[in-house]
Image (cartoon, rainbow, N blue to C red; front, side, top):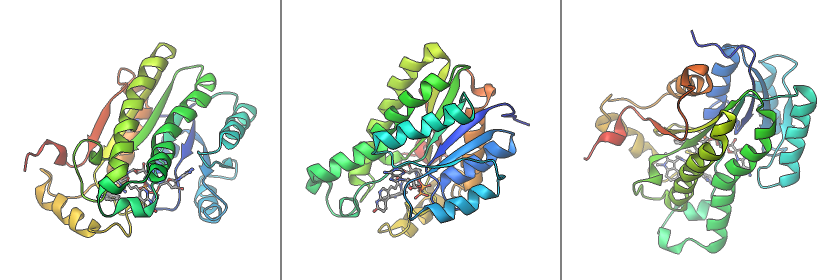
Length: 256
Ligand code: NAD
Ligand code: IMJ
């Protein structure tokens, strides 16, 4: 059994119970970590509040839109006050304007490009910088990517460019933070039916495609991501940093 006993973590990216962040956070909590959560905006607050309450009354829930420097600063100031240190950070945040996720990538506007990269890639850098001073015993920072960073997936468009940037950010952050024993890794997940996937043109077809083409002949379940998120957070992964680990039922190895 993997233990995270004595570790303190912060989770960015829970919107509802289907969120990948929620699956990983639950595994962290079950393994004994003390967690704090953030929510993007007041619209999402009630649902996240309900989920977080199931982990106990002492679980901090803080507002954090990752495009707002003052909200990021506020979160880490509160963590400093409440816990004095931090070991784990989960970044499970992505956004591009809906219009940019259909039609040709060629038509991506400057504004959609900026927003996608700011929310989905730069935010990891901002959060890592704010978290590092609290990670005085070392730490584990984990983010989520998708194979659209490396291969063309129709409609993924500017998110593919943003995820490629995110994966490069993981490597550069791993280099900068390695001497402080802070590890930075990325889980590249196969498609999962979450809020971020719903309404995507052709999503059902993509799930079917994975089921027939992935070596394991099934789709990824949230628990598959949770167990890898738990391992990467644990001391068992002490020598793993800067990596992109595919949790996709083997899909990524295929040529056709
Ligand atoms: P989700 O919608 O549950 O999570 C996305 C989260 O991003 C939400 O909680 C949302 O509030 C947050 N977010 C967006 N803009 C934000 C902002 N400005 N400030 C703070 N938070 C913001 O969907 P999910 O599928 O769980 O997505 C989590 C991560 O997993 C994303 O990085 C996504 O790219 C990645 N991913 C998803 C899939 C999939 O098929 N669902 C596959 C691979 C990778
Ligand atoms: C997203 C778009 C296009 C194709 C897609 C996806 N495929 C998958 C996703 C095949 C699996 C989901 N994914 C991996 C994401 O990273 C999604 C990010 C995302 C989703 C939305 C939808 C709502 C919106 N903006 C978004 N921004 C980012 O307005």
